[in-house]
Amino acid sequence: MAIKLQTDSYNLIGQSNGILQVFDLVERAADSDSTVILTGESGTGKELIARALHHNSRRDSKSFVPVNCGAIPNELLESELFGHEKGAFTGAMQTRIGRMELADNGTIFLDEIGDMPMTLQVKLLRVLAEGEIDRVGGSKPIRINVRVIAATHTNLEEAIQSGKFREDLFYRLNVIPIAIPPLRERKSDIPLLVQHYLKHFNTQKGKSITGISDAAMEILCSYPWPGNIRELANFMERMVVLSTDKMLTPRDLPDKVLGDVPKETWEPLIQAETDQTPAEFLRKSRNHAHYIGMPEEGVNLKQMVEEFEKELIIEALEKTNGVKNQAATLLGLNRTTLVEKLKKMKINR
Ligand SMILES: Nc1ncnc2c1ncn2[C@@H]1O[C@H](COP(=O)(O)OP(=O)(O)OP(=O)(O)O)[C@@H](O)[C@H]1O
Ligand SMILES: [Mg+2]
Image (cartoon, rainbow, N blue to C red; front, side):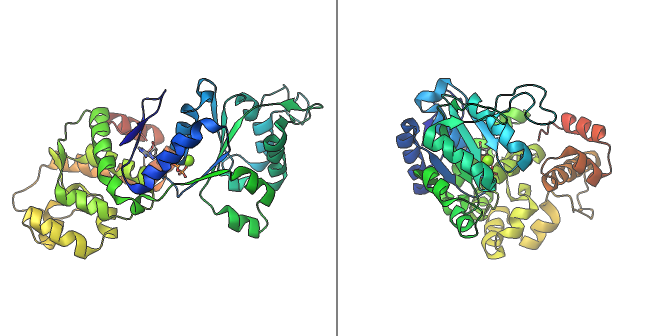
């Protein structure tokens, strides 16, 4: 089942009990104006759920303003959130409106709230308690009406214990807690997500892969998905880009998947589907960068070299979280050469 968001074309996908409970909370909490705190591992969908809450509320026609508290240096965060008056500090040439004011009558999404410094936590408390902010260097408070949604992948109760998070703020924020379970605890969502991303990347990459074999699907369902849905999306993109067949099969699975799923699980599945022993499978049909050796039937050199190149490029991008400068360094290429190759291969990260 999928909740259709009212104004966006994207869907929330899931059918497991765990995610259905989340969808149910989203539907009930969306229009309440109450503060929501989203918890969940990286890549579980915290931001997507925050957007769903906003789009299903009466604030939908106003802004949804995300702020990643962990990504903005502490000394800039206050002015980023609350704005500043001209001359408030060296370099403040003009009055600047902060994100809180931009979110007036809409929703502010405070991502990685656990990283917010204590001094700002006090100011956030004031927004929640009194609906007022002060621009940096401002002389009179400004009234605002924002709905606050916060997210964290760290445990705030532990942060309170160690003196890094204010307890009073925690209770103000924790009105409606929504915990998004990791993908490995809702395995029945994996096939839906795999099919969804297969379709999505087929269209985006102009490929026409018709499906995925049972063995490949079962192996994907047994993988622990430490990076959750973001990792699944990346793997699907990679498989769709690299595959040269009509069907995705175990030979298309990234090495990491076979490495992290117990052998006892994948070996019999592969044997049953391919009629190859696991050793033969690994030697002959793996479509991967570490392939060496010449099979009896020979190879298509051009195609193999291209696949090898693609795979190394994708691996470099994965290792560097998509930072192209760093990926280019890993590959011994100029950034511009890498960018050209990505364009040619229709890889966009
Ligand atoms: N239920 C879902 N259905 C479809 N796609 C989803 C779902 N949940 C998450 N995604 C997709 O997974 C990716 C990661 O989601 P999102 O950015 O919301 O995660 P996050 O919890 O904010 O991650 P991080 O902690 O790393 O910031 C996005 O591309 C999002 O569209
Ligand atoms: Mg996020």
